Length: 402
Figure 1 (cartoon, rainbow, N blue to C red):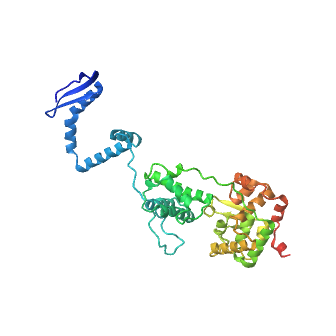
Figure 2: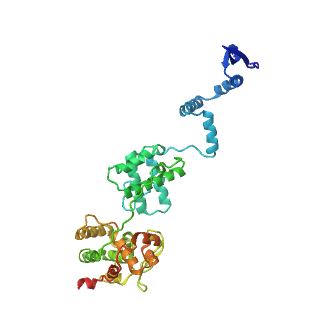
Figure 3: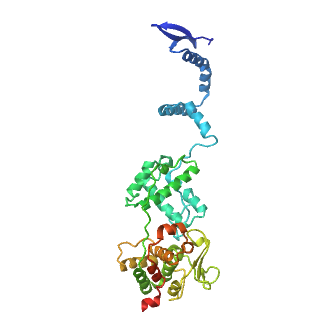
């Protein structure tokens, strides 16, 4: 096509710019409001043969992709060229997002050691498989699996991860999961934290670009108000344990008078050799790194009252089927104290409160309990009176018998 310049004419008193020439041997006339618009049209006509030749060389699948991309960009209000330019700047060196369902993302952590023949055993994969590789304890992995599989059942295992919206997560939390249970705020916060961790992993795997849970409002919990057993309550649970649940009495004594977590007491070994956790010369419980919740070596001093209760019988730890026996003891203790529900971790909270009030040494009590001084001051300062603290550390078996 020969070079054609825009022509300026007046139409009904208004200046218009015209293209008047031949395209592919056919006469064509177009009018425009501005000279620049006319020049752009003429420039495009000179490239049309080249574009037509390029288009004819494309495969059918390439044409379909370009056509679909053009329509999608048009629907969303931007040009195909602008989309490509944005991607080249913000995603240079990155691949497209991977497709992954919730079931694939959650994955498996391999064999559950609690089962002799795990019915759901798979090769480790996905989020849980990576947690296993990170040497996370089996208990924590099982906790993660419980919450995430609940979310998966609620949402559907075949739902793509990038299709999970903040509204879906909020609906799950409000509904109480797939079983429509009544979840308190602390339960909602706990489960939402698991979903947040899952989608942080998905971001690292190039499955999603952002975490949908971060668009939800933060769940604020009520101030922590620990329940502390009274001196009479302590005496009752000790007497009950000695009379009806004697096998778990060492666990109770270590929990009540040393502040050792119930889960930690079940890992203790009273045998001889390097595996023994008891130093009888210094009257200390020595925790190895893999035996504590905080994964830190810890030394816990055994008080005179603790030693007195431990010496009532031969110490033989660990206890077979300790979880079941401990839970059965707590159920009977709840009935004996006429509680509707057993206050969460109230035995350990009692140690922290009476210990801090008695010694007024937050560093020592924090070291014993495996907590921080800041947490002790915030939760346990002055929950009990000084005289009550004195009585607590004088609860001995012979005094109860008298």
